[in-house]
Length: 114
Length: 114
View 1: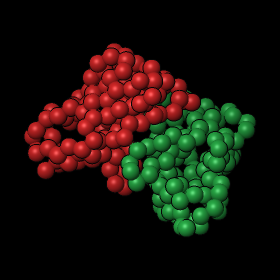
View 2: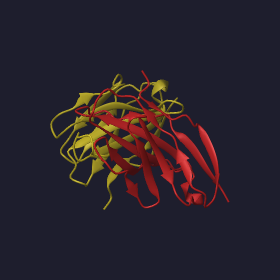
View 3: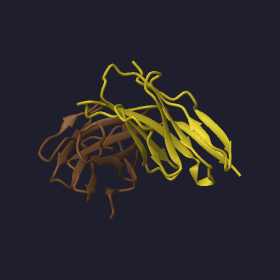
View 4: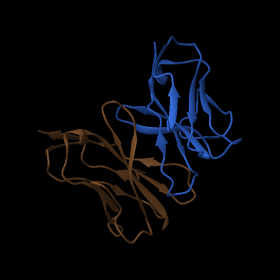
């Protein structure tokens, strides 16, 4: 049982390049999330998808777009990468949005924008 | 306003000792959930334990227990018989009822000494 799978694990981009981070979960979870983690700032929510077919902005959505392709997959796109987007990106999923539903995380993508 | 406070940026503990990681929270909701996550140096985020605000018993999961003091708004993680593999960052998080967002603390870096 793979859980939450993210690709790629590492990526280096030049300013202005675009890329898509892929995420898939095999736990039949309804809700999926994208976070970024920066030193000293903890985890910040970029976008989330409460259920298939819906997406909503989180705390720091600017510069990103998302697609909930189906129940399993939730991708994050950087259209024009900036150095400020250098970070570690985590995808997560949960059964639903309920208070007792823990998030299960992928292993993260370390992105560097030069 | 900061809603999750982890006052210990770093801790050193001797192997086999018990360790308590502090977490205080702030919410006006009566219904909420509290979570603890572990992040080893390898980077993945691992869900450890959950406590609901209406749960009468403190949550336990193996060597992990949550010392929940509702009146004090604290949800401290207790690790019994610490092991070298417990060395990691530990994050406390809270979700209020009806809110999709997990609110994260800044984390505590725990180092277990042999």
